[in-house]
Length: 168
Picture (cartoon, helix red, strand yellow):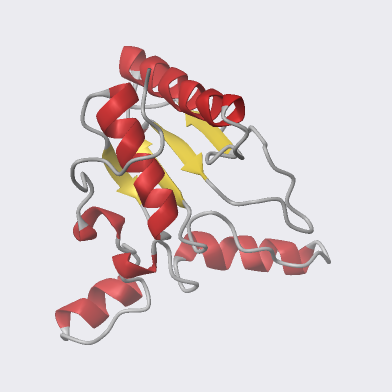
């Protein structure tokens, strides 16, 4: 049986891959200042689940292409502006909430990762626990290096249904 309760033997994800990659944060880091998109903004419980999936279910490396996003990240600005344009409230997504990553993966690796995430969620359900991953969303079109699976752990909030699935 897969152990879902004890911590993974180590952290498999570096601060560099989890930190915000927007131009504002890059510039702040170059200047040696504190950055709003620091990897320490990632939710530790979410990362603990991600590490257990990596070590005990998927059992291979997971390359994070996008982790935490500060509110100045171009994708977050676009979402905020779109919500304003549509007359809807902006609801923080997985990335700026510290509970979302995009894992660069394609082909059989993408299939296996999605399966591993669903198995991990199922194990939590069987134990009477809430599912840690409320969004498992593939982007598997275009060049191989641009393909990923979004893994999110945001809980149900006004304007945000969870669990939820979308494709890109």
